[in-house]
Structure formats: structure tokens, C-alpha cells
Length: 423
Image (tube, rainbow, N blue to C red; front, side, top):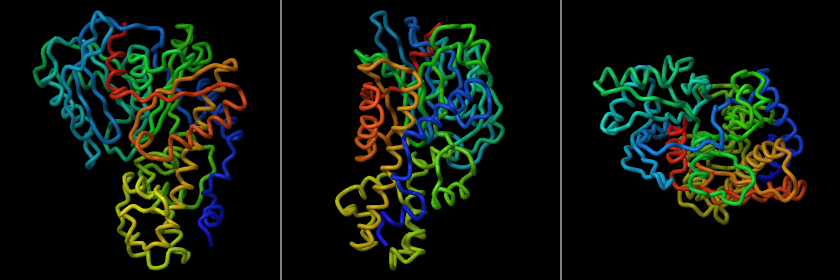
């Protein structure tokens, strides 16, 4: 059996995913989420507008990502430039074993103490499902990407962090705001003029996890009277990794059942860096169990596949050293499986972006800037070009709307600082 036939047999083949159906279903979930009805898309208003401008001054930044925690102090100058003054990096608390929420806040506060000078504002970029409240704080909805922090879901973020700082002797008080990393990527790209000449902006992250954000008409956010009352356009965090109206194949279901959150983050488990290596390994073990990778069972049982190894396998016949123990023929089969999984990931990514853009009803000839962030999208040799190909086919050829990707260095850090200085 060929790799193509194997993937079709187990409903993992990109050819079984209809972009037209995907976009229609995604837009329906968008509408339901905005109305407050049951939806696999969170559709959380950010209570920020692209038209807002920051005030000059210093700001503290916390970038709580899927793997890493970055803390920084930045300054927005009178010349409208963001200057990074100091950055500290460490591992995100709760990624190396379960901890309690109080321990997480104290760990972050301790790392933040040396950066406090002359800062009365801060912004907490939280890369997990979180409902931003009208006052700027955020309430954690759930944890994804295998983060383990007991007591954090349902908790606020800013007030317990500020309390932890005060307990540790921090002077004064700070005014905090919470945003999502996609909002940070979007604002960071705009702050660097990465999308100059574009008619619309989207924030998109594909790294350890995946998500997207965009502007929507405030009047459509029916579930939030405060958002509707603000009028105009508002940035909304879609929590697109939760989209679940996608056909799951055999390996998808096996991976989902073995995860910490069965039944949730369906799209994320198909495309993100936290899950893709495990999905590839699960798929290859399935093939080995059917006799399609003779002699590979023992190696696959203990293989620690990473996204770097996934990238190696994208070469001709999978010429990366990591998969050499499989032997030439098995390695070539694994490379075909890998390419089909990545092609499906690109198709899901393109469908997500196309659905968001179509919902804006832009006129033909419009240009959309996707402010992209995340190492999975940036470093894999197949994901971005395949995504661009699918977007040309399903969006540009159909509606005349073109998409340009901008990947700004430290976009999330810059965008978080930008948001923290908005009044």
C-alpha cells in the first residue's frame, strides 16, 4: 500500500478536506461565538481598536508563551518608536510539571522585580484561552498545550500578579492589561509598519500552539454589551485552535485520546508544534502496525520526534539524519506521510485565514496583511508556501483579495508593549 492510499484509508489525507466546506463551517462558528452561543471558537473581544495610539513612556511586558516566558521593559518614544531596554527569558512555569496558580504568579513576579524601574503600566500577553474583561484584566478559560497550573482556569491574571509583586516588596502599583499573543503579533506588525499599504490586518500565530485574531464590527459582538456600546471596529481573539468541525482521522483520534484535553483544541492538535511531532509518530506507528514500515516498530516506540526532525524529513526522500535508522525505503514512506500531514496543516491554516477574510466582505483588489508569528510557521520549509498556494486558490482567484505575510522580529513583544500603553 502506498503512503497516499494509507492516508486516505485512515481519513488523514488533505484531499479529503474541502476548503469551501471548511470556510463555511468556520464562519458559522464565528457567528455563534460572537452571539454567545455554543461554538468551538471563543471569539473573545480584546477591547482594543487598531485606530488607538499609545502614549510615550515605559511599560512592562510579560509574554507567557507555550514553552517560554519572556519579561521585558520597553519604552515608546516621542518619535513613535518602541525601544527594548531589557529582556529576561525563562521557562514558562507549569510546562515542566504541575504547579499551583499561586506558585506561577510568584515565579513571574520574582522574575519581573528587576525590571520595575519607572514603570506604572504593564501588559500580560497570555497565549491560552482567556476572556479579556472590559477593565483590562483577563479571566483564564482553560489551559492548552499541556500546561499544568492547578487553580488557574477561572482565575484572573492581573490582580493576583500585582498582589504577588506587592508581597515581594515592589514599590507603587501598576495598571495592567491582558492581551492574547495573536493580538500582540497583529499590533507588533502594525507598530513596525510591516503591513504598509494593506487594507486589513490579521494576527496569526503558529508555534507551540495556534490562534488568530482580526477586527470585527463591534455591533456583531452581541454577547458583550460593553463591546457593542463601544461601536466601530474591535479586535477579537478567535481562539481558532479550538475549531472542531474538521474530520478527524484515525491517528488524530488516537492522539486526542492520549492528550491532557481530549475533545478540545481539535485544529491545534492537527497543525501546531506542540502536537505535530506526536501526530506524525502516531501515524507512522499506525502504518508500522499494518506492516507498511517493516522493522520500524521498535524504533518508533521510543523515537523522540521534534519539529526540527519534521523539518529534516521534508527533504528529498526524507534525507534527514534523525530518520536514518528507518532505512531508505521506510524513510521515503515516512517522508510522504509527513508531507501529506503538513499539506493538510497548510490547508487548515489557509481555510482559517480565508474564512476570517471572507467574513470582512472586502472589495476585489484589497490586500490583507497577516502579521504572523511562531517558529512552526516560520521554520518549516513546507507550511508557509503551501498555505500561500491554497490562499491563492481559494481566496485570491475567487474574490480578488490578496494576502501578504509579514513576520516581524519580536512582534509579540512589541505588540504587547504597544497595547500596554494604550489609554
